[in-house]
Length: 432
Image 1: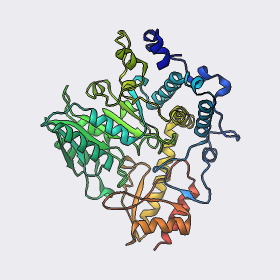
Image 2: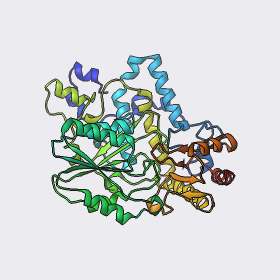
Image 3: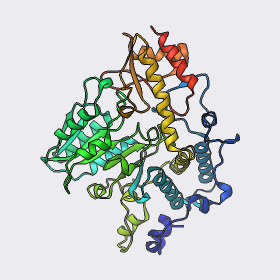
Image 4: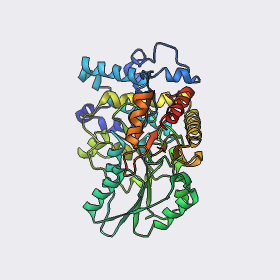
């Protein structure tokens, strides 16, 4: 097993470039985390919901805020916690194998290779690392939209302030419910100039529920070695709308794993194409063995961009290592089935809300322009009051969009049943 300690002790240069054993081999099959006591049937949605210990007295439509851990993730966290607590040094001897297992699981889910994946604590950390890592100069331009979240806007502002670059925002639609894919693509295409170095967009807008046509945007951008990189905050599509990352169209893909993926809290990732990684400089030193090899002046060790971009230092190991179980849960269920189920529940909710006289549905009903998020206005009611009344009077979990124009926001997911949707519609009708 290759760890930083064994690497620094000598002989690590050769080992660093080798393929590491999986976590199950390193720790022994008897140590692998078990699922819940009841037999898990990934083909049965009742069985899927049974993996979560959510309060059944509340109908939770807020998985997009911070997810509940499913049974295999809880078991993995507990297993790693016990190992670290009982013999910290001995358990850390498996560190590199466990990190490698997570990277392989992520790569399998994403449809890419593990060398292109970096790990972070959140979407916000990932965005900061990416935009801070661009080698920008005065006169360069960063293009984003008015619909992006604070984390994107602020990361771009900080990057521009340090480099002398400028940030420009464009508006993609006036009425979200009537958003048009061709108009969105054309607006972004026209916003790109020879000075544009990056286009920062969000796959699914948390402000409205609009899903951008990322593939069409990518195809419309001018090619070339100095082309603007299409960077995507993917957090509200990742785990809800599965597309192999190499097919999505993004050059850089950033997401937390503790929302729709139902991964451990405090986990996230970055994926980028090889030519995009070449244009991003790491900000925080990596603890990958190849980083130590360079520090020690050793040569001949492959330096993969994903591991080099992964911040080093000791972190919440038990959560990072349990991320492999979250990916496996989705693979067991079938990412396409998760996508279909999420779209089915969201579609039923949107159709129902659209038929309520005192509700204005803001999210497009077209599944090509929406995913799991559903936003609306309920009469003339303050959104905070509406969300409070939904919870206190009807036991429905919803949220308010944290933007200048607040809206009531729902997020049906695989933790929900058909009855949850019907109960939500009944509760909204009662708010008249």
